[in-house]
Image (cartoon, rainbow, N blue to C red):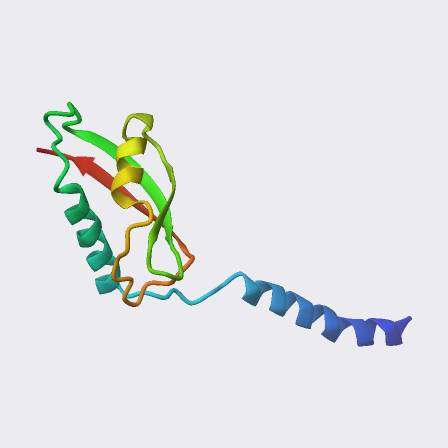
Length: 114
């Protein structure tokens, strides 16, 4: 019994260490790349006539991924009123992904102002 414990202890320690390391991954994408992404998305919303659509001071949180073709894929929004506008403005639009990690989840808050 003592031999079994001696043999199993290192295996258990190895499994525990491996499982702890599996949950951590280095973050790709610099702060500058994320700021450039935010600026690019903001520019895409500049063309919307907020006043005529009566959308002034509305906010929406958008969750999206950037696919392998450097396109924004909108996954969900938290504002049903703006959902269609956000998807028409961003969905499948090419961007310069730079150093951003592809196929990772991103989220951004957008406030429409005139």
